Image 1 (cartoon, rainbow, N blue to C red):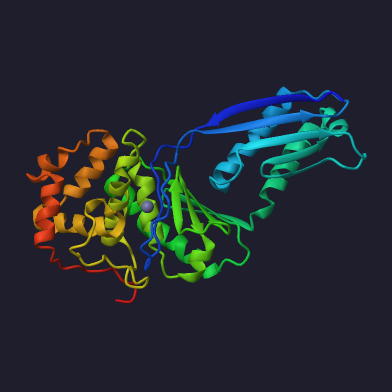
Image 2: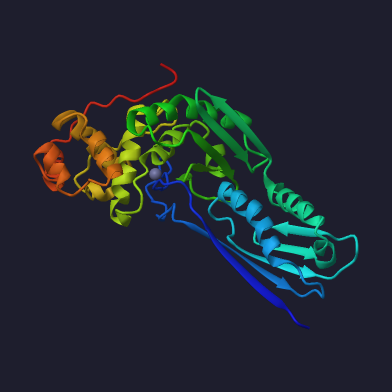
Length: 344
Ligand SMILES: [Zn+2]
């Protein structure tokens, strides 16, 4: 039997932002870091084992209009290499699909009239695991909430949405008014972390959110990642800085850090230093803000986004190198901290 194999490859570039993950409160272990927001390449390999010859260019175009938008919203673990098998089979079979794999009846597909139906059926099949999709718009901002877990608590969903509209517009206007106003939240049942952001999407692990329903300021941390948009130029070296700033912002602008028992850990002599990232770094940044000069971290964030940040920026802004700042912090780390609470 002759099999025609055709592979299409194309890239879908997500809107620019750098991303990362939130660590769980009360857990010290860090989730593995990944560089996100790289251009995404999708491939479609058509294995045509049918006697009919399919117009693969038209098929590729139909696929392209459905699959990448689905996969980008669905999550970055969603398969990007897709195999499509064309088979000869019983008349009633049209096609079936799961992420990464499509099977279609060659005879049915060869009829050009069925191409639109193929597109629709592919779309429906792929979105089968989406329990609900809600779009909420308010004051120039929108949120599409895709829930993929039928057991996800509706109250948590409501609270995450409320936190988005309360915090995110504030972060955009304060830090980066060019950041997207259209955000997608996705709940993911398979994800074992907490949450992560890339492009304009924030992914929430439902296992985590069901266990820590009050941790609504995951939205603040991840929302800040969307606002940061530092791009790729700094590489992995600055993951600690990106995460430190996101937790610093959560400390300052989070809506209920008390409710989620989220605190900045007291300085300990054994602390690994500013590169410890997340809350250790956030506390250090708050110390700089209080004891050295207010606004330095905000300026660092701006320069990271503008591409003007250098190691010497710390000294330019504060008169001290980063190591000198840490040494001064270590010598006198006492801080007065005030945490946000919904119950005050
Ligand atoms: Zn993060």
